Image 1 (cartoon, rainbow, N blue to C red):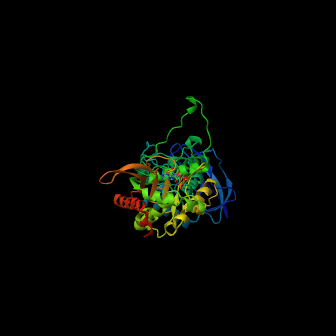
Image 2: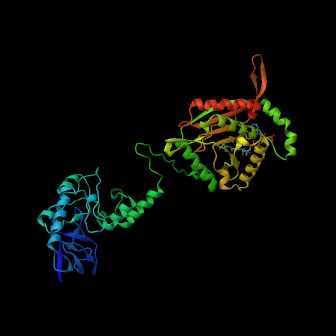
Image 3: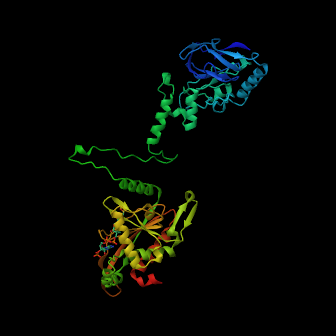
Length: 467
Ligand code: CAO
């Protein structure tokens, strides 16, 4: 058992390199080549490996000390002194490091089990500042010890030094490098606030925080979404600012997601609902008896169910990132409801199996629940298609936004009586404006056109609904 000193190896002529990190403490067991300290010169930072295996009995340096070649670092109690076999291994490791271009600091394994070995720390596009690694000659000049492992822009081999041309060093200790690897952060993106721009743990944390808060980056090749600047409207007149409801904000996010992801096409048509309206008027008393209201909507829902059954593509959804299409054998239709808190879309299940009266009752029930904010999550899930009816409000057309992952939505506007040419004369007919928006990744113009034409035809002659 003897106590021996580990000294600073040839560090490439650096006059005074500062101790910026102690990687071991008194009492620690260290292995051969395990990094003891991190030195930082004006070129790069480098880990200094131990030339001995044993127990640290004294640390002869402190953070901030300036060291040159030969300066003692630590006293280590070794059993039987340095093992020549270990020295051979160390030499071989040094050679490996050179021949493997092992040079690539990212792959450099200090072999000591200490995580946080060097990693690529290059900013390729930036100005050259990392010269040949200070430790580059160390492996050959001191074959019995592993070379210092550069942790900055410099590396332990000449090959790596060449690759590093044009690179800039990033100063960061092994703990920070380890954390950066774990978080998947490239040190080149992080601004160091430590001495000489050294990247501290706090800098990494700050970087991650800022990245999470920032809007998602545009994929390569795509334009980033331009942000709409905030305007101080108070400069132009009196204003009142209110918090938006959660529902409002959620709807806004869903709308934007759909608008940005779905290539929309909208097709328009008018259904002649003169006969439907006559039939509906004839049912007024029956509706009162059933204590319900019969608007055109249940007929529209029923007609949609038939058209969805006959046009299965409109009743599908994209899956697996667009590689497959899911055809649904059920027909659940969402119904947009305008409430004081915002827009909600309860879903009426199995529309194809329900009668007009059942649908009328369910429209009233779900609309009431929506306005009273009593809808459960299950009542808003599973829709295959959506109907947005603004008929009671007005307007003769609008382009609804697809309620993803559905692939189509029907916008219904206010019916109006108009003169229609019947071949021999103009006759007053009640026309219901329809707009079908669809996801053009799934639905072609032909699919959309067939669906909308069938829908208009079903509403024009509701006898077909019973077929
Ligand atoms: N044309 C003419 N009149 C219509 C009509 C149409 N397309 N649709 C409904 N009407 C009439 C009804 O017949 C009723 O009149 P009567 O009482 O004289 O019969 C009146 O308008 C009111 O109807 P309603 O709104 O109570 O019932 P509804 O079944 O048509 O609609 C509901 C129910 C819940 C869909 C609706 O109230 C609603 O909230 N619509 C808004 C949907 C929306 O906001 N869409 C936009 C989403 S994107 O921002």
